[in-house]
Each structure stands twice: as structure tokens, then as C-alpha cells.
Length: 188
Image (cartoon, rainbow, N blue to C red; front, side, top):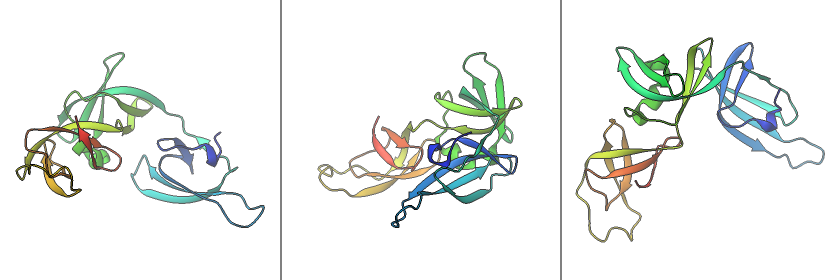
């Protein structure tokens, strides 16, 4: 049983006998003496997808959810679900598209480094790698000498998402995107 202070982003715990994944953690240290640090944690319910905000003291115990983490690779889209393949035994798992709606823009065919959270052989959620490489499909023409300024422009990527990129980048270039913040990191 982990303490609230030991939780990390991506940890899965049970709240009211339902698995919840940790999305954000914010530690608040009170200024008065003898008071314990408070952890404000945002969870996502893995069954319904609802957000839940809770506060815990650093030494509060939480029950770890019974789920298995497996490395998978994105294979293909099948009607209303996305299919992933286990990297060790090649078994396939599918998850409804609506359950991973906010992550679809980072999925490309054959993408590796994804972790699937399994419970009773069904996928509860997926964890994307921290960054992915995507191609710029459409953006305004690059401007020479624009590296000195911090100005950005919108760029449509190969998966359909739009991000802000530096002015010097052009269509057809491959860039690295942070999957947590959705922001440009660098050229790939």
C-alpha cells in the first residue's frame, strides 16, 4: 500500500473499489509548524473516465489497484476501437476510441513505448511515451533568420493535431512533441 507521498504520475490506486490513475500531483507545504504536507491529486476513473480531485496528507495510505503493466505497440484502428499488440507474446488488445480520445493525436501506426494497463485481460488505459515524432503536414512557409526570435506559428501534424512551432520550420519536417503538454520540443 503506497503512501500519498509515494504516488507518481501514472500510478493506479483503488478509490471506492474502482481503479483510478494519477494524472496530476500538487504538493502543498503548510507554513505552520507541525503540519504535514498536503498532496492535491487529480485522478481519472479508469472505468468511466471521470476526473476526481482529492487531497491527502503525506502519510495517508492508498490501496494499489490490481492491474498489470504491459508494453504494447499501436497496430491499427478497428471501427470504434484502437488495437494494440503485446510486444512479448503478440496478443492483441483493443480499447474504445472514446476512452483514449485525448491521446489519439499522438498515435502513429507501429508506435512503440506504449504501456497498457490491463485488468482481467482488458485494457483500462494506455500510457504514451513522454515524446513522439510527428511530421508537419501543413504550416506557413519558413522564415530565414527566425531562430533568434521566440515567435511561433500553428502547424498541422500528420495525425491531425495542431501545435505551435517555431517560425523557421517548414512542411514535411519531422518534429518531437511532448505527449504530456502537447508542445513542440525539437526537430527529430
